[in-house]
Image (cartoon, rainbow, N blue to C red):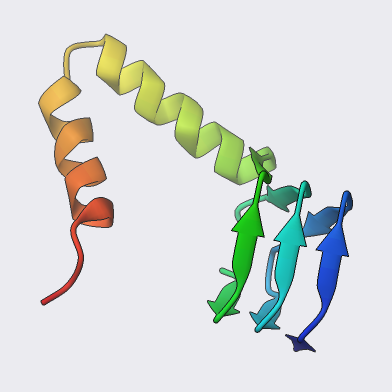
Length: 86
């Protein structure tokens, strides 16, 4: 677990990592579809979120089904991840 680390202008691989009270400034954050990262109390400023390998293929699939006419299904998925739990 990374605790209280400040990352600045770095590429950080996220798969399977845990971050607590870390600060990310102008970083490239890369997720490849492996074990989910954990973030607790972290701050992000001007970061680029990059999806590679399996994660990139998942995004490509969502784009494909959107274009094939399943726009409502993709919008439902987006709503599920953007609505705060009660």
